[in-house]
Image (cartoon, rainbow, N blue to C red; front, side, top):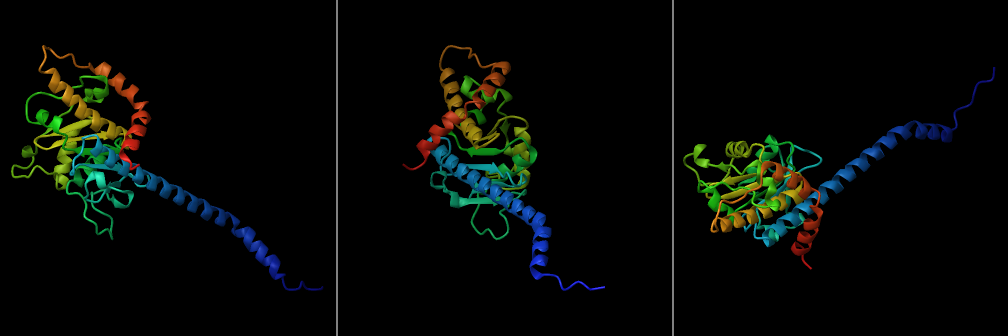
Length: 272
């Protein structure tokens, strides 16, 4: 019987390539997914930066307001800028924070003191994808008086769910009004509950949304609703506020048109 000769090296190499093809395809697919996730995260970061810019232009946030967006890749994390005035924020200023609102290892830039507002709301509300905190001037009176902030027109319809007031003294008698740790953030998130807006006595407000455009929309129109309500109190009343049914319906209608104002605000916010 004649024995077979040594295998052809080229045939062995071809066989190995064929054997490794599924693994190679899986590796390529995984790399493509990672790349897609990275592009999505980068786009979200840029989206967020635009929101921070436009907020200042719409008189909603001052040098101390901030915006955040939940991470698509890791829902237990979120993006927000380093401690910087919103009008100056660029994509390069974005930081990724963990579930405890702390910067990821290796991050040396200074974050916002009140980042716990965002992290604890994300923890308590899985439906929330973006948060805006501001010191909106027109809103302040409603946090220090017994007059409730209520939806006075369709653009403020999301306020149908209520605008409860967070009283920090109920949690910590000695305070500086800032949400500077997780326990205070948890208490604020508890006051927010299932609402879209929470007022903060002597401080400002925080609104939530299912994305950056909606959160920014709500921050802008909470400010406008507060202005209109203050004006209406100077006229003969009573004020006819939106009913819950009207508020729910108008909120759903507005949600379907967010791209219209978002496109305009981005154009106004971004440098020409």
